[in-house]
Length: 247
Length: 302
Image (cartoon, rainbow over all chains, first blue to last red; front, side):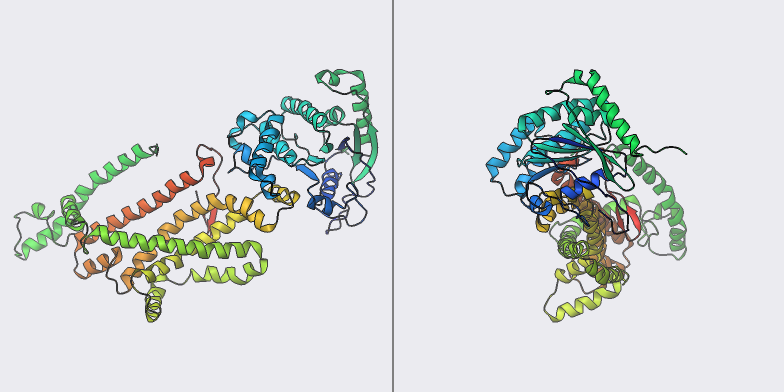
């Protein structure tokens, strides 16, 4: 992936994701992890290479509404209530009225916000807003979920709670999730595989399978295996000069 | 509607102005009254002090004169020479002008946002249109429209629209461009068409900007309507009353009409604020900073 100004954002990136996987892309800023996700989502187009999503090109996948996308910010419409925000994709995709409502209510229940359906976004905390945006991404039941540092702006405590909740959602819905993060513990805790990326030019350094047993709980973070895996990720990042070294 | 916390400070200022008004009024009127007495004019008063509050052409009218003028100009309510009917006509011109300006502004704003070529080709002309003094255009426009049988209040509404469309165009254009890039990406992931993106994202996002623009445009439209009434042949309206009383040198009446037009302006702008609260319920208790629209180079706060 080369940007018009000549910056090589992404070079060697070969990756295959199986249905039902939880893949994390981890790496320092500028390693092209968000670029890779945006390529998958057809928000930008590759200058070379090939991407297939269930046999389709990213453009076809986008047009057939094959994926939901959760951004760094909740990007809720401030003029819509929480329920109406979750109904937004359903309105655009032409679902019939009663079904929109039923689906949106079900999704809000799934993220535990059914009591806030009639609130406006500004009345919710940052973590709750991001849960609404996850409910919105799942409302039209896409098989794939792209998440771009969805919890990056939240405090550690909220983030750990939402990590647990996301894993529960993943188990209950059987979605395939591609998750961008720059937090090592988050990547280890959530993923079935971690894709370690390194910058300048962005490339995939290595892929680390995570064999922590499911379902994962708060205690998972305190196991020896968790620390071993976190160390492995850290070393892979260092090996690829993933750290900015002061000179 | 909740009472503004500014009410008390505002009342204090009003009282201070009123308290200062009296001595200043005497100060500027007494020399005039003295001259009138010296020339031996037939006055219903003996001393300059006494006459100062009863002059026919005072520098500053006394409060009791203003009150008298107010009563005589307000009633009967349906008189063609009283304020209520004329203010209603001016208000109608202003509101119709604002409506026309909104339609034109919407067209230009969508064009500016949707097409760079449109923006490059037309924006300079839109800006240039505002440099022509309204008082120079108004009489010509009335004559031209008159040739097509368009008469009465309609040309005034069109002149009001001519001034008001500019802040509205800029406001809507700002509002249409206000959505976060991520929100636009979001619409793309839904494979939303550009019409859907306007309907579900750009238009709702521009509503607060529209109201900010309305507050500026309302005052501008009112000025446009009154200027149009003054500078053309008019049979109704605040401007017509001002022109008439100016020819009759009726200072007291002009003061009363001026205050009435100020009240009309305040009322119309307050109406926009009220409508805004009604139509944007999600902003009611919000403490987030309100959008600022840049109009003709100066920041206009919401």
